[in-house]
Length: 93
Image (cartoon, rainbow, N blue to C red; front, top):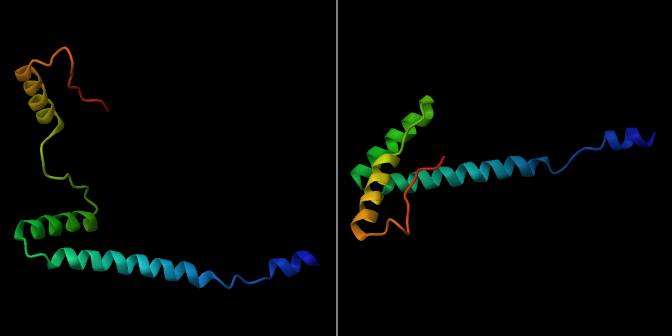
């Protein structure tokens, strides 16, 4: 008999999970709106491109240097400063 009473008990705090989801989505929405309010055209284009990639399911790559280019720049700096015995540049996965 006791098992039936505990099984039938209703969870009265289920609304809290829905409320937390709502607050999280509102926070994300207002952060996005704040980002869009910044008048930098390049940043706006970058954001719209990334949002488009997210909503279409394509995985985008952030603009910037590739790891190989960066490794070459660091290696040339090490050689230029004579630090071959002290520092080594390598790409590790």
